[in-house]
Length: 304
Picture 1 (cartoon, rainbow, N blue to C red):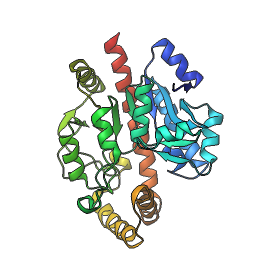
Picture 2: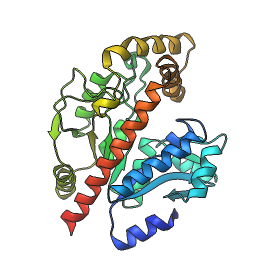
Picture 3: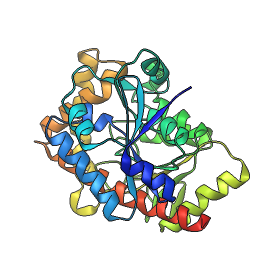
């Protein structure tokens, strides 16, 4: 039996049938230093409230699945050391041994679905890493999207990945990839890329209807909503390309593998953009949170 510890705010929202948006917790524990991590997490939660929904930040704390964190829990998690980074493979083990872990995209989707939450906002999903044809380094996020019925709002996949191969795998797995408001697939820190998005929708109501229609058809899995970073906050793709290539060469030279690759690359890019990558990351997460709130509201309205 898995018990869920709901925050008071999320419990009230569930009881009242109000829209709820799930949030991951790795941005708090692995994304940025304290106290900036707590400040940004609180800011993103408030963006969701301001857009008419309720935020539910998800984490495993002392073996208990928390859906929604109280302010003191958020602060404690932001300062905690040795917090596990949880995905599908290790989430159950962390719960079983009473551990503490922050949820990635895959783990947050699992927890959100378990708690009856249908919409989740994040920064960027994981995907196919450069050189995956020999390393087989493909994020569990893609398979999670194929089997767990949660709509995930992200600024595309992280730009350090092989975006073309990521889209190919998502197509193979039958995951709808919907660009919001444009025809191109966004590239995380950059609003556009040379890649065409498989689908385009321009309103939260249409995205919510697509989610509900998949549910009505009995189709497994969720959908990826690729929401471009606002133009005023982006870093141009042509500026980022050599920086990303240099960071990837460093990772190979230092034999960084597995779960260590993404944080290593993001740190290198942060250093070489003099912090602008983090500023852009915060902007895109907040932008995604606002769109996710709109989708969650539309789902509630369509069901009412």
